[in-house]
Image 1: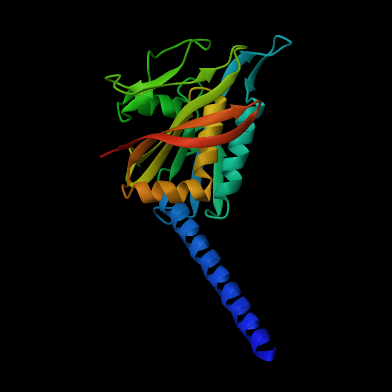
Image 2: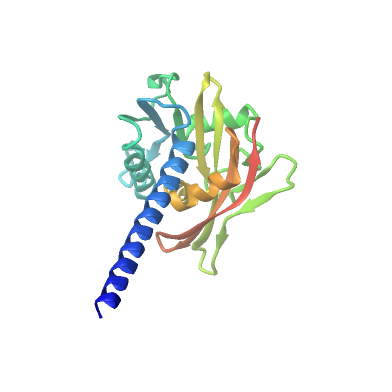
Length: 242
């Protein structure tokens, strides 16, 4: 009886220690993946540049800068995720305030975000918005210049968005070759949100790191949508950048 008790205690201890080792190993992989993607160069500050819809008519006919609820959630979620890794997360809509000694994230597509637009026009992104410039109510398509790969959003019979696509590119900063520039842009606001959700998931970042050891690359991410919620995201295209 005492022998059985001792065996059970030893087995329990081994199980506990094994579980702790597994959790620590898993946390180690997660931390390495986060730092690999988001902190490739140690830095005390990161800039999060968000373009606004400027001078749009409000419901009372006044001109005002606009940020919709979905974009505000995307911006807030990304900022909160970054704060443990950067002492300063500077959110700005003014490019003149950016200090290019630090990494920069450009959040949003080429219509509201002038920095994203400039990078796209320089031809640095092999996956870009096709048939630009498009109007606000046009179908938005992401694809390669040669149209070998085309990625569309999907709508249900009621015209509701059920999947959206967006991309993230991690580039050498054109303003500082020693720093990184991230471009996050989607067909619609949910595409932006889905990309951010994907890139703030430790599980997804571990998967991305296992796929890539490149410094500079671009990926396309599809987001599955139910109402205003993202139910899942998946990486559907990957391209190494020089």
